[in-house]
Length: 298
Image (tube, rainbow, N blue to C red):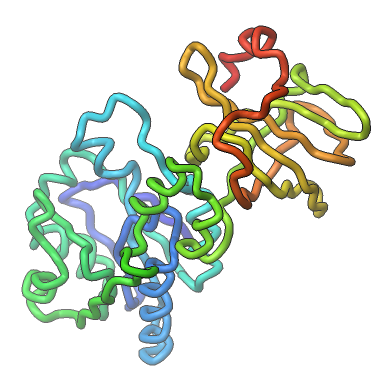
């Protein structure tokens, strides 16, 4: 998959762009609803024998428009999103920088510049996708804004029980610590990545306990004690994780694994969150007073 990063420039002209079926969305987490949209678009692209492209945005519009003081709680960082979209069959990904200039674009101008300009012959998006100034453009107006120059497929909502599967639902579920529900929304357990803080390691009775620095772009589940699987160098380790709140308001992640031998601070682990054991933190954490020495690492 080719990834193309764009910053809005009204004088920008795209040359020699192959015809494509274009998928539109933010795709945070690339959940089952997103996957349904992409599978629909892929089938159309195969029928038309054209490329499958996608437009997404970064940062999240709420970061720009809502004046949020805290960092936006992404489900997955851009690198994970790219990997997942490539695995779903996207041939070309356009990542448009979301800024106030882009947000102020009239809906028709957005479609002319990015959808028609990138040679889309068919557009596919979820029923609630919006675009243009104040989100005034939607899946009912997109055909008119494109003057009939491309076809449109609107994918209806995907539900689990009576709830619409959405990135917001997944963030709320993580916020409640209900990680065991996540596979119903993502298609698999939630995963994060982090590096071990070597100076916090405690080894005893064949077990290793240590704190991790979680890579930016992930959202840790709520405070509590969890059953996890850890992936490292093609091996899988069963263990537990305690998500804790320090006195300075920093949320940290302590893991305990059996049979694991950490190497250095570049030991990058992939963590799969299986279920919550207890709403309380692990009753026997690494000494928190000592951890404060390393709090700037989180």
